[in-house]
Image 1: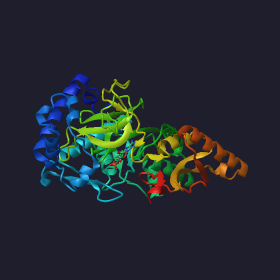
Image 2: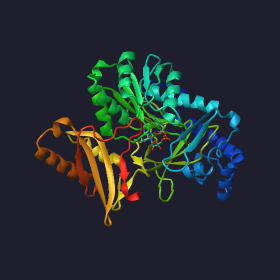
Image 3: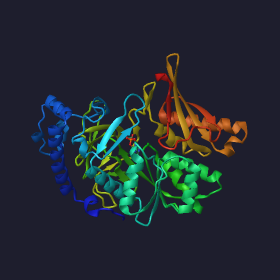
Image 4: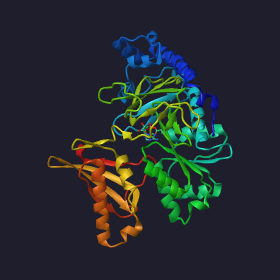
Amino acid sequence: MNYWDKEKECMPREYLEKLQLRRLQETVYRVYAFVPAYREKMEQAGVKPEDIRKIEDLNILPFTTKQDLRDNYPFGLFAVPMSDVVRIHSSSGTTGKPTVVGYTSKDIDTWAELMARALYSAGASRYSVIQNSYGYGLFTGGLGAHYGAEKIGASVIPTSGGNTKRQIMLMQDFGSSILTCTPSYALFMHEVMLEMGIKPSDLKLKAGVFGAEPWSENMRREIESKLEIDAYDIYGLSEIIGPGVAIECPIKNGLHIAEDHFIPEIIDPETCEVLPDSAPGELVLTTVTKEALPIIRYRTRDLSTLNRSVCECGRTHTRMAKVLGRSDDMVIIRGVNVFPSMVESVLLNIPGVEPHYLLVVDRRGNLDELEVHVEVSESVFSDEVRKMENLGLQIGKELESALGIAVRVRLVEPKTLERSEGKAKRVIDKRKL
Ligand code: DLL
């Protein structure tokens, strides 16, 4: 097993929980003292820092949401003076102001440690050549992975996203052994590779560390077989620190949350009640070591479950299940909740279908309709019309039985749906327009 920091990653839970409690108490004192918005919320809820005597007391603290970050735009939730802030990132809000996050130099160190853990867990070492194709810039993916890779002592190629042909040329010439990017971009790279006449076996690629968007188990199988690599899921969000909040180990049965830095909970998104670990719900995270932007009970909107049992890999940190989707990516069609990942899972089990798809939701009269655009493979597309029709019918049937609603299927030519170099767009909801 590859551990970057065995002592922390395999710490007995009893010690881990003591450490979490001490760090949580410090964090709560700090936000109460230095962040007026937190103090106000706590006062409204009638909570004082000294009320936190055990980890379970977390649930008397108010939640923090993206709206709180917006209301305090840009730096209102920072708990340190700007002279101590060494980095600012922000997430591209599609509407309104972006979400701004800040780091002290210790926060950058913590983040690099967590990314080192994550990359190590996926088999990286100082002998690896890591091609980092997450976008560099305000997005946390690029710089987050970069610092972790350097911390390990690997050789980092900071290609960022885009210019895919050049990426592949460098991958071949520099002998990249680990690729870091979004799963959808990894698949796009594979397509471009084939167009360039390069086979994955011509490359030295061994593993990929993919995240920043939901992807199904079937998508993992697709990537692993097409690129001939081991694919690991990495989770994170800017508000908490960026990538590296949780990472899969070689067992690939859930992502270990770095619990010496973050405390996870699962809540019912409607009632906000804390749920038992195995019940699916919204992941809520509290940072316990962040200096510049400590966050108490952040509602991630990501849906998952928790598993606190010790993993076969020896790590004691709680595992979160692969994210099913975001509650705000979920489309409700005639009362039924549909996640793009459910559609993806069905599609990738059907031969002749490519892992590129788009959900288009529209309203005709008073009825919501879901149309799924699916790319088919070259061979299917050039086949008889009747075979295409049959494939369309089969996809429609399987989607209907998995989702429980009628679905119109539109088969489209290979390589016609838009490809992404970062997070893929899977849903167009025309009802909101
Ligand atoms: O996407 C950080 C990141 C970069 C994670 C690179 C992993 C790799 P944000 O742009 O703030 O940060 O977006 C965070 O992306 O709340 C999830 O909805 C989604 N997300 C991130 N990782 C995963 C994953 C980065 N492994 C939002 N599976 C999160 C599913 C993910 N969704």
